[in-house]
Length: 246
Image 1 (tube, rainbow, N blue to C red):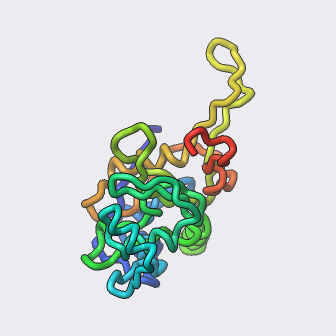
Image 2: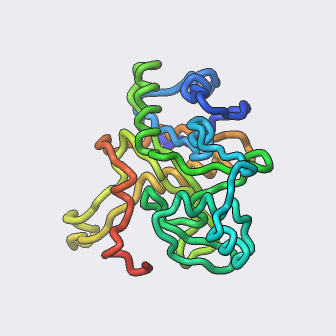
């Protein structure tokens, strides 16, 4: 069977407390959910559902945030949110702040996002996207009896590469990485360091059908055989001691 990636259209604007699984199962695509499917949810609908949508008019920037905003031509309220969500600032240049979030992710602006949301608001990353993915997976099992994997994706830039790709920030029911170390290649040589971030690849593949403006915040990936060992975001975070770029 061929790999399938199926977009799920949800026209409703997500608000805190919405049952995302009910919304999924009400769609024609969701009603056809199968055992062993992989569901990829965008960070944006998770953040909205979990109340991580922020009214910018209520943000009071500190003197530090105001100073950084002035120096780097950024809204000081956004800077304040970045500081609140950040463990460590790594770089600031050309109006971009690269930070290490409280989750351990290294990204622009601590994942603060003003796209696909009404003016005057911003969304923060989920507090614990692994837990969010686990909750969704259990809800699907409870509602349908089917065992699936759930990944939460977000769009990130990459060092030394233009453009962005979707990566996993939350994982449940699927191994995060396929490790080929110890296996032999086609020339019988032993592989030593090849580890594929399979959940990142699945997120990027799902973005091809979801897009950013199609109101398809969920994708179903079907007919992909995967390791059902429960992965996590931590599996994907490189230790600072092994990172050549920090």
